[in-house]
View 1 (cartoon, chains in turn orange, brown):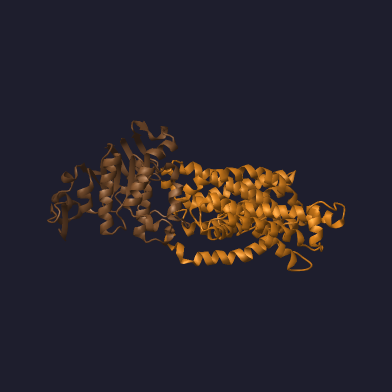
View 2: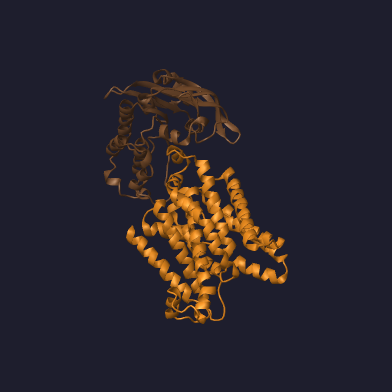
Length: 330
Length: 248
């Protein structure tokens, strides 16, 4: 297990360096090392690195890691391997919230957009779970159907709100919907990281409860926890984390869905004491790599990270839906 | 140990069972039977507390459920569903590590032995057969050392040998740890030989609640299933034997 975490640690560092290296301005590895170890703080490349690349790398890692942790938590709580911020309609709700905040032109944006997107996400996730509760088990794939429909609906709703904005603003908002980095919102990441740290800490500390929840209500109660209280707590926390991430990057799908699966296969365990930190590292690295790829594929422009993550993630989701192993859950 | 007064249970607003007055005492094996859909699982889940009661009260050692901390409840009560499953890869060993804090050494050793977990311990639950997985879950539940154990169809998926093994295991737990069991099951032969008291659910209420020899008579079984029934002794070991045949 130690070796596996060492590998993940190295993966994070490597993908961090790749992320610092990728971009339209050519910066050599030597200049990156100089920047990291503060030897030449005055050069042009150092300015680019400190004002553009570094904040971006940090914010990409933050978004990827938080989405992966939220995905893992939602999967454990709902006992559904297909659950994630996107498939539960939570990111759609978050987008609507942010679009409303933009529409109302509330200032300062770094306060109101995360707040509104949080409210939107919480409303939508509880709406989906409430609708599903009447007829479905949370374990079922039909829950995901309801969630994806909600995501599409809310996505359309946020486009509706955004199209009401003045042209120059709506252009930026549409970029946000596609999931992009490299905007001024990258600078929000450190603040949101600070807010997220205690939430992540709480989840790591209570990972045992999460293990119990993944065995179902009956076992959770047998092990001395209240299923309802624990579920609501974990859903609220993971929704809040997701909304923070989405307010920085816009809609990034599938990182939250795929990372926990990679982690479970890699670690060969789903005990959350290991799976949580591993998802954190894996999600961050994956998104760093996807974002770097988006910056280097085309010479004169960027492909939004949200688009690349969906291009890779959607086929993976379809593959998982078709996989027979979970047929018993229907 | 557990007492209910005017208990109604069900899902949403629709009660499946009405006005139940039950008293389950320590160390007894209390069995619930009834046709499919008669509310056995609903009753077990409500008594265990995972399903809120619609009306009435449940007292555990004289204290209403709502006044007991979840942590203390977890120490006293445990439940096993008919078909438990872990949604993600999990080895048997890891499953036991989840319950570790509430597991007791003596009970664990007994259960590990009785359900022959040694060859299964490193395997993934998803790789096991239904019967093997059931053995693991039974052992996991019994190793918690709870005073009151609810089990929904504990014999489901078990082969004949394992069924006999489980019968003996219940007796051992009752004797060694004075564990109280509330079990829902269908197999009439098992019910006749296992139950200290037997509760028959029908038409959203308790049709009959008494010692098994009083509840399981050829007349009552015939009335319940509309099939002719004979109750006699197994000629080999002298245990009670229920035989059904020919629709009335």
